[in-house]
Image (tube, rainbow, N blue to C red; front, top):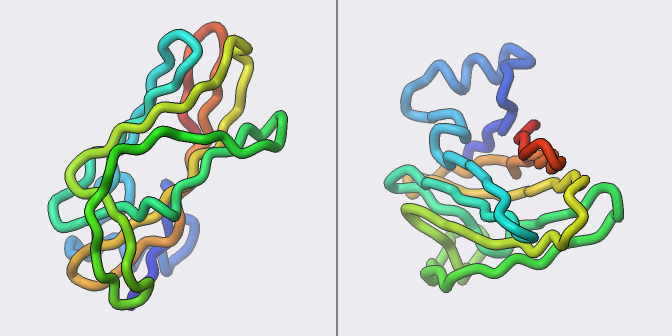
Length: 141
């Protein structure tokens, strides 16, 4: 099984070699991520490329300032018999989850997720940092 770095920038020659090959798209192309804040909630959405999926048990959301995990509400996924992880729940096509962030809008949340392709390769965990301020939301790496 091939493991691929989830970096947004090419930091070394290995990354360049992996992502030049059109057969292995960058994780940001495979798992298109966006987020929006509305009221005291943040809505996170992934548009998942055909033939790829995200693992339910590989998601985590951490409030960096409070150093606490946040709970998210997930829809039901599909059960998949994974060659390496056994019986797992996964999401195909698109996924939207909701986090209750309360009324304090100065937050920094790390969202982590991982997925694979049906062809047999998996991406290393992807991390996105959500900077939430009164002025709006910014997504960083």
